[in-house]
Image (tube, rainbow, N blue to C red; front, side, top):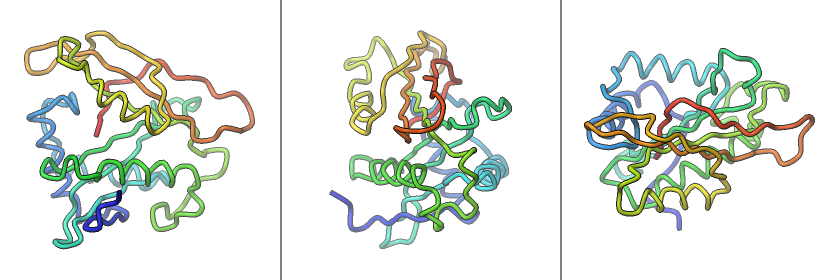
Amino acid sequence: MANPLVTLRSATQSDIPVIKAIHSYYVLNTLITLAIVPSTDDELLSKYKSITSQGLPYIVAVDASANSAIGYAYVTGFRGFKGGYKHTVELSLFCHPEWRGQGVGTLLLKKILEVLKEPGTHPEYIVNPGSDDLRVRIVIACISVDEAGRDNALDLKQYYQKFGFELVGHLKKVGYKFDQWYTALGFTSPLLLTCQGSIPTIYSWPSGEGF
């Protein structure tokens, strides 16, 4: 059930300080991202400009009672410097720790997948959608797993699978953080079930970020 206190909108440059605070929490305290050092405002702003200039969505969830961002989601081009990957993006999704378990991540994930499927019908999130030749067809999500953990990230795996993501890759002990090695699991979600040409499944990706 949607949280009536939460609304969604396209991110703006003014959201960067809150985005930084949320991201820094996960960098310093969790495995949701394998980043070690929090990003600066300038780095986050540069990434924001790069994403939006490519016609990709960058969405924030907002606490309507305080008009403050409490979560965000975006996609980045997967190995964008290689043209053959132009239809594939990687998902990043973060929720303010005080709002976890209240459906914020689900709202963001549903919306960003909806926007990517039909970019031309969501001008509030994508101002200049690319041509059909550049349309996103595959979304990658990557999570870090402590294989010695109690549930081996079962909840997180089931969460992505609930939204149509398929587990397609298992990179054993490729990440190192908090004095321990971690495994990366990769999921893909095809946005378009019918399209011209074949859609390859991607089995290799850099360590990504989760929700």
